[in-house]
Length: 214
Image (tube, rainbow, N blue to C red; front, side, top):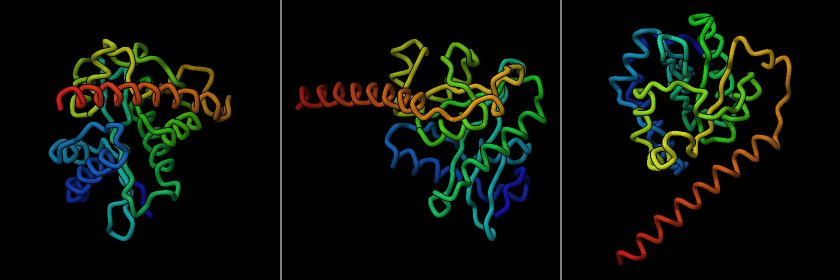
């Protein structure tokens, strides 16, 4: 398995990366913003992505975006192909893209948003801290990227203050990073329960509307 900075030779994987992200969203049912193959191709061609390859096959991917004049960096689009899941690859990719982001943008705050407990755990172990959305970028272009997520209505109803996703931030100037803390399962489990409660409320509301319209 090779986990490397993406380059022009990896553009051929753009379509399968998009398809894998889309299929993962369907399986999880909690919403993942879709990406176009053109956008993924751009990230690969500019070297703003990490890709995992195993014997010439696509295995995993994650890319970098910058916001607010490079004050914020987001590691986004993390995906592992189904054939390579449950092998620790996601954490390897996340660690490598974090180090790459710190190297390229040493003064930037690095963040991500996710609904998955597994990714929350990985982020926490790497030194990310759970934060409110107000501590992340306020750039409208970033939040516009959530429009293809099927939970976008939750984000809008809360005036972009919260959603089913949890925001996690790695601040290079913060004194509590990976060397200073251990993974706290209770904290992240509580966050997950809050998100699940919101999700169930949304489902009940949708079910009620469907029942009324029959």
